[in-house]
Length: 280
Ligand SMILES: C[S@@+](CC[C@H](N)C(=O)[O-])C[C@H]1O[C@@H](n2cnc3c(N)ncnc32)[C@H](O)[C@@H]1O
Image 1 (spheres, protein in one colour):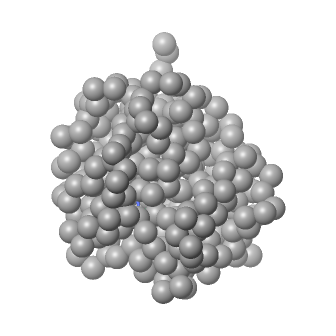
Image 2: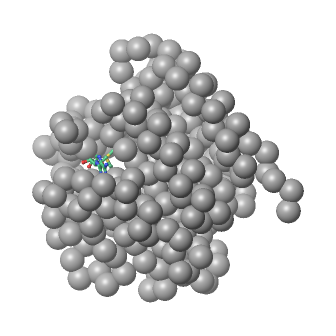
Image 3: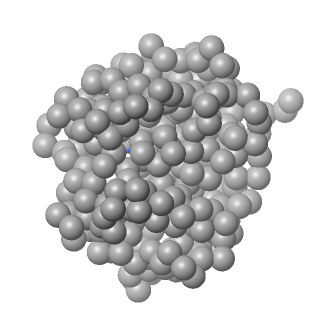
C-alpha cells in the first residue's frame, strides 16, 4: 500500500470533511447521553504543513480564520487555532482523529483504527493520556464489526478510505455501510468519497438509493468541473441517518466554504437527500 495521507494533508477535501465532522459531533452533543465515535481509517492525526504537500495550498491555505459568517466555519477555525497554539506551531495541522478527540466529553469515547502500524503509533502518541480514546492497528472495514453496535446505542462512524483502488473502495464502503446499519440501525455513518468521474458517482448513488432504507444525504463540494479526469475534482460525504437540521445548515455553510476555497474553475456545492426519510 503506497497511500500516505501526509501527501494530501490539508487539501480541500480535508477541510470539507473536517468542518462537517465537527458540525456532526456538535449535533450529537445536543443530547447529554454519551456516544461512540468510531473512525475506520484514521491516519496519523498529527501533521506539520511546513513539510507537507502543495495540495494544502489549494485547501487549508485558502481557508480564512477570520472572515467566516457561519458558526460551523468559525468553530473549525477556532479548533484549528487552538491546536496550533497547543502545539506551539502555526503550521501544525490536526487530522480528523485529533479534531474529534478535542470534541469529546467525559461521557463519550472514541476508537481509531489505522492499518499502517507506524501511522497508528504516531496517533497513539498524539492522543497519549486521553482516557476516552483507543487506537487500534488493523483493517478498519473488519474492525467495524467488532465495535458496532456500541453499548451506548449512540454513535458516529466515520469511514475515510484512501481510494487507491477507487472502484474497490466504493464497493467496500457500500458493504461497510450495509454492515454498520445491520448491526446498528440508528447510528450516524459518514463516508468520504472522491469526485473524479460524474458517471461513477451517479451509479454509486443510484445503487445506494435502491438498497438503503434510511435517510442519507450526499453533501458535495467541487472546485473543478466534475468530469475532468485529471485529478480530484471534488469531495463528497455520504451521511446516513443525518442529525436534525444538518442538511439545512450545510446548505448555508458549504457554499461559504466553497467560495473561500474556489479555484475559479466552475466549482460548486450540493446537499441532497438520496433516499426519503422512512415513515416513523
Ligand atoms: C484519507 S487517510 C485518513 C485521513 C483521516 N481520516 C483524516 O481526515 O485526518 C486514509 C488512511 O487509511 C489508512 N488505511 C488504508 N487502508 C486501510 C484499512 N483497510 N483499514 C484502516 N486504515 C486503512 C491509510 O494508511 C491512511 O492513513
